[in-house]
Length: 106
Image 1: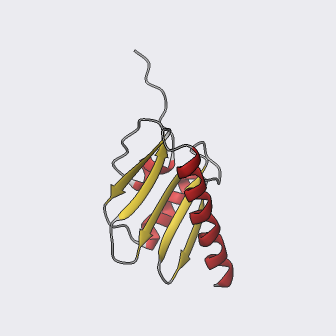
Image 2: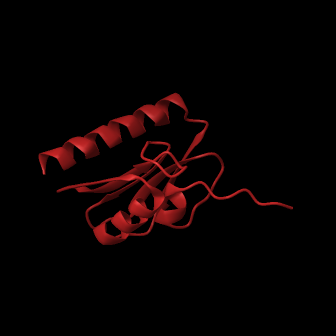
Image 3: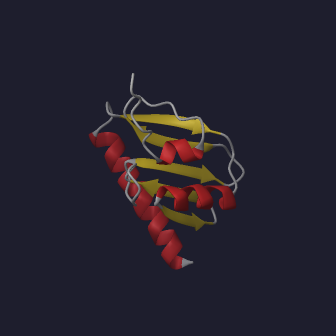
């Protein structure tokens, strides 16, 4: 449990650092409530790092299939989730927030 708290704290600190250093590059979004099982599943599929403590659950990815902090989702207990993504994306789900979409060919 202590390890999970440490990972979540690290994730939040790094998210904050990214937010202040690249505020023009990052976008903060609110997503619907998500269960721990749903977030863990989306996080595993995106190759991210899942963490959980008494205050909430979180996941961070590099947006390209590995752990990191470029794309993060944090869900306080019984509240809507907060997501931070890079670029001008507007993901509508936790899974979309944790991964970078494939480029569209015209």
